[in-house]
Image (cartoon, rainbow, N blue to C red; front, side, top):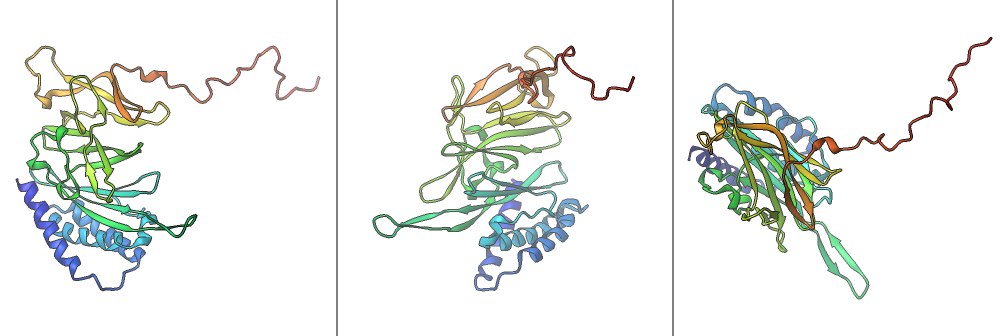
Length: 311
């Protein structure tokens, strides 16, 4: 509930602040980047929780001021640390996310989607005019009110908050890999789905997973805050490969108590097949061939010395 309160408070103040700046001249992107960079220490490293969230209000405003400029779509913001900036390969959108930690071990998540909703206008029988229409959508985290994350479908105003760290372009949708620190006992990782409706609006969650007896809109992994779990996309194999999680002790005693879950040394994967993520269990990650595997090995008997001494 406290997580939701912070989100509502911050985005309420953010909305009011920007309605007052509609007619102002744009500040240059390098100047805004410098202002964001100077503020990031307070947002992520202030000792007092109240100071972190107070600084985050201005942090949000500066990001919006930058992202609402069309030129910012191709601006990297490389100097800013602690913020994830991911751009789709088709250049349709960019998603920016970050987290602010709270004293109780939980996290609050914030971000934006910057979208290029291109419009094609016919100018006669054989002519077309393409217009780039840039839009910015703040992400408002509502995850604290969601009881079933895997079946939840949201939009930027009702986002299941997390920190995204990878983006995969798919046919008709995009796949996002994300992390949620959750609390001091359990952390989570997600395979999230994002797609855009015909009107350009963004939707989180989609039925693109092929799993026996399940139809999730995203995949959630829960495990101990004391261990690390691998969840990575392997472009060469077309798979999202992840650690298989299990309780540290065998038997039903710890079943569902995720603070005791961790990797058991085996791996599973979701393989992209006909635009759906199909579950593949117990995959062998050692099967990836090196780029040198098919290179002909030299025959020692036919090879000459690189240097032949004088006799």
